[in-house]
Image (tube, rainbow, N blue to C red):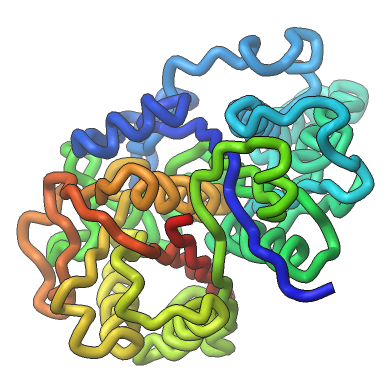
Length: 413
């Protein structure tokens, strides 16, 4: 079986800036972030006291009330986003072969909230106070596992864990499996919910998080010279990938095509990117080459753009190497983490959804808070305001601790 075309037929999102595709997109296009004081615990004594939390989310819209007690938040977010995507794709029983359909979801950390809650119970009152549902509620693969149970997906099923690249790797591997004829449809993306005392303390002790507690709205500022660390976010972004002919046959509304995937490892440092952006360069080049597009056909990059001192200039330098003169003459780049915060393992899933929407709706979301650009960050980052632009293709970058890198390329159908 030869290579096959892989298309996107459904999108779902639970994010700090909206709990549906339309809510999220409206916020992004208006340049509205949602960073504020942490409400899930008392962060008064923490170096970073702010985050981008999911707000006004009603889990009972998506999950049975009894089942909620057995699931950590990241699984609930994944199920909610998957339901949105499944419904948009308009998939009904009898229109797909369960053995040829699967689920791959990126999860960077897993069930931190329920783990920490039960650790406190263990210390305070002993092992009998630990819930018997702790393990199935916290392990990463129960995000795709629960989705598979919900929709009778009997093909490939696993969680992709590669730190902040998890969601992008998940989409990329799902794309490869369909392209190579191993599966016909895969529910894929990312999910994460790690705004917890231990996680915020851990990232804070690394000095990876912002200290701009007195100004939450302007704390996430990718490519700005005054950036000082990232904002933790949470949520899920899920898409339905299908083989093109099968999707067309059942009358699916096709939103875009995943056409390229790149991956690499810096093999350099556990937290810092390689000098000169070597890993990011090879990753982007691989995605473009696998799509058989010319680099100048890529009109938009949804950057990893974390708002950390090291990442942003390194990613900028890598983009310049890959795209040459075009990087500063027509290529649009933005970091939606300026609004959503950094969703860790879910980031790549949410940003793949955003990249697809940018192409489908001919609108590029902005990088907000870019008031004083770093001299080493000198591309067109679509500052402050969204911009109308019809682009043929977009790439989404994700780079994670351990030097793991992933890029996907989405194009217009």
